[in-house]
Image (tube, rainbow, N blue to C red):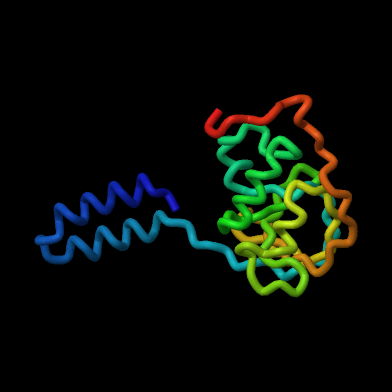
Length: 161
């Protein structure tokens, strides 16, 4: 959604709310400029190899590199706190994990917490919607543990640096 456009029309609607018929015209202009979300794709059976990451630190870069041993404890805290977990695939794509094996929750999911920052290979069902890749992991086929030993390169990164 184009929020600047929505804010602009919201301001116009607020100013014109007392003029009969203006709300309908403004609302129809606004709705014609908003994109419609696409439906999710049919699931595709995939096997993904990559590192388990927390999406908050990865996207915001608040913890620097946000991978490997330098970020392990933070990644565990994020998973326990409900930050969505993803797999940074070897193909460079980010796959948001919605479920792991038979676990019915992604918040503080014990399986996810135990494999944070590990390099894994998973089998699952991939859905895509609006450019986001969602993954239902059916099986963690291989868990190599933490292989990204980047303490030597990055050290422990202080919060917010």
